[in-house]
Amino acid sequence: MPLFELVLALLLAGALFALWADKVGAPYPALLALAGATVALIPGAPEVQLDPEFALTLFVAPTLLDAAYDASPRDLRRNLGSVLSLAVGLVVATVASVAVAFKLTLPHAGWAAAVALGAIVAPPDASAATAVLRKLRPPHQLLVILEGESLFNDASALLIYRIAVGAAVTGAFSGWSVVLMLLLTCCGGIVAGWAAARLHIWATSRVDDISVNVLLQFISTFAVWMIAEHAGLSAIITVVTFAMTLARRLAGRMKARHRIATYAVWEVAVLVLNVLAFVLIGLQLRDVVSRVHGGEWVTYLVAGAAACAVVICVRAGWILLHATIARRLAVRRGAQGADIPSYGSGLLASWCGMRGIVTLATALALPSGEVPFPHRDVIVFSAFSVVLVTLVVQGLTLRPLMARLRLDHDDTVEREVSIARNATVRAALKALEQHGTDSIASQALRQEYEARLSPHASGPPSKAGHDRLAALQRDAVAAQRAALTELRSCHVVGDTAFHVIEEEIDLLELAADARHQEDHEAPAHGE
Image (cartoon, rainbow, N blue to C red):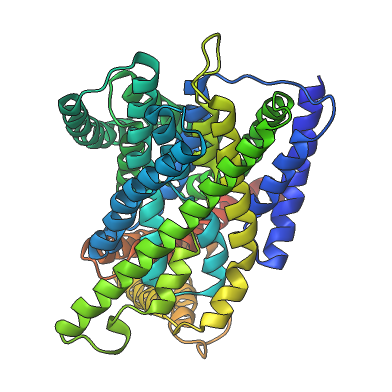
């Protein structure tokens, strides 16, 4: 019971932190990290032991799907070089650097344990940074690169993590087996994710109940992760492919009520999982701290400080070097102005290396049974130190840093939103023309859509002919969705602008549904 009460208290604190974070411009995981550290110091807090595989499945799968669903394949392809540089090159460099630092701190530690720590702290959680950056309107390209990094760096880091854990437990390592495993896990994960998404769409298209539909989404997410794990595939690549395929295929098929309910539930679920992850790592950290005595504290603190310094410095050096090379290549190609990467954007990206839920989940996933993972306690302590320092120090200074850098305003998304809005409205007006323009309902609905093209259009439409109006609006909404999907398929707009207009169309669909329901309920009220 004490654990349940503690979790309830921390969930309430997480809700308050999320509200406070919006006001102060800080990522709420930074406040959760402080709460997790506080939990570790609470006397009498219950001890918790999690199954390693359960920890990864519970905390990583839903948050990864939530991030991947909004990713833009078009924008990722345009920035593929930068994304791969961060998601693969920087991860490998960070793993190697942290492993060397850990070996210098604990010379008697094995390389497998050192590499495992490096893989745990290597992948940043860009969602924490982008949650702040979106409100500050940085260059759109920077957001795309950070979001792409957060999707694929988890896969490379987790692959290294599994190799290191396996080597530490079994004492065996084979280079050829690693190459074959890399090909199988990545390529197989892509195929499995695509197939699972198609199967999910086919199965849920016959389910109209919103609550059951949302529940099936969660079940399928966990199922895809677990099936990939048991099949020896990359669970992260599989889930990312699964989510991106769903996003592309469901755009014109999911009803507005389902989509709005789904987004709301997933936002709450991700918040709850973040709170629980920090609570549980805090409880485990308390157990770790209780076993540290005397001079061991020096070793633990030095290991944690070294890991923090390495992940921050390596990221800054890697990104600024990449920015320098990119600038020179752009100048050679004859690029000018905004087409040349700026050092300001590179500096901001280097400060967006906050670690979060993936680092916590992989630290929790280290074996802790009768034969615990070598140096597990110091690894967990160092991992939490990296999460705490990067979230608090970098998270709380991200807003003032961007204000000082004064980066050029980027209106890419706004421009694409305007293109999509005008194109979808014209598609709706064209659909209305097929029904004639003489009826009161048609004229009223045309007024609504013309108002979206021009703020000086005529006032609100008449309430007459609601039944006809609802039918016309459903046709117009269908035309808008088809036009919007075509714009994204032709790469005229990216997924960010797509989702903005999709939300507007959803609201129009809800209005049409409300009119339809009002017409059918009116006779009953009259009676």
